[in-house]
Image 1 (cartoon, rainbow, N blue to C red):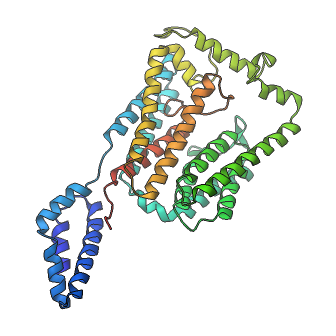
Image 2 (cartoon, rainbow, N blue to C red):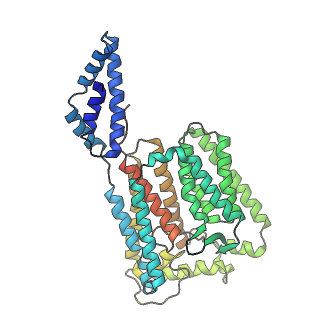
Image 3 (cartoon, helix red, strand yellow):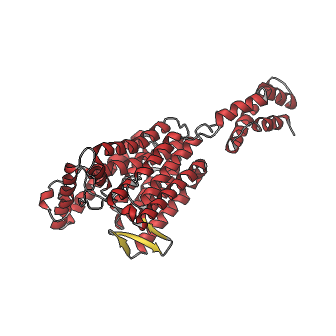
Length: 421
């Protein structure tokens, strides 16, 4: 056994984290080899040069203790605390609506929270760097889910196709989003990705989402990809050119789409600007949301039975404001916003390009849901079926957002596992 191996073994014996041991061993091996080269150039023999290089590293005990402190896994207790508060607040809409007394809703919500917490915790302890080379696998899984839903299902919920596996699972297009998220983090981290490859890889899921149809997930997917692209290996000029081309393409697509719509469909879409023109359709929802928010008080309307459509899902924020008041709603928005702020703060501490792409993607997915739900509630964005993270009732929305937080926790945990060469 050579002196280098003995030295490294003694150093890593002082390191408590099993995850950190191999990274410290790699770093020490590199520095000893570099030092050895220098001594060889000065005329020393192979064994003399290695001995000098090892001595140059200092005491293995002290070095091991220093590296153990430097490379120990970190836990983002701030993010975990905010996540726990968000999970807790998610029960309040069910309480105000009286659903918490129904066994189905209460048990379902509890199981959803427990699964979300387990997903976040499990991902925190999993080394995110192992996903880096699995981009194609994640992409193919996402495409497989969308293909099955697009061509092999006949059941729909609110117009969106789903695949029911009795007593086990209901597969929906939202399930493809996390896999595509991991895939694009890998693709954008590669310098070999070409523009034509990007166009092809983006277009396949996009077309499947559009033709399903699943417009909400089309919107979320598109925002995620184009935000992540800014931190890709593409230079800024190429990114700006792609963004410009995409904006032009979307304008042409929307213009073509508008021309083939029937008059009643146009009326529903224009209800966003003129709700009174469609009082019995979509316009009713805009007017109703405005009416409910107008009636809301600072400290809620306890005991009120005011009807609110989709009060536990698509309009859960409106329901929350009405039943608990503007003061509590401000606290809710503050906590949900702080989750995003914490993700931003963590991203500034990450030097690994792949880890940063994961954080940017997670942040984009989270913010697009939060911002769109709030904008829809206040009538400044067209009504679409989009959840308020951790508050809206439903397994998949909660699980997807828990996965995003778990990814952030995983990256943060290993932010100091960085080789210094």
